[in-house]
Image (cartoon, rainbow, N blue to C red):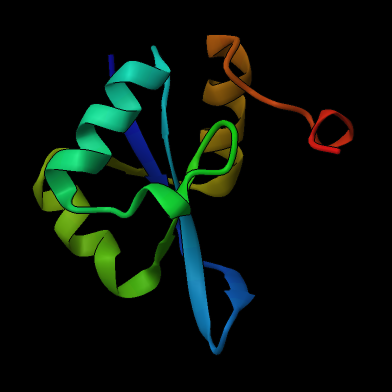
Length: 88
């Protein structure tokens, strides 16, 4: 079981954002997010949106830094991925 965070590259609200996911379970993801102090409003169906400045702290707390492509591949392989067309 691993919590992953990708490279911040998604612009919104005047900053860059990264994604935080679990490759095992949403329970693991939510527990990690609670310990890290991430607000519940940051959760978006299969990931948390996190501002770039939080990434080093998340890695220090045990998240594995990966590329966006690697994060997506591992999220799909986990069966937890919510496809864009299913987000409506």
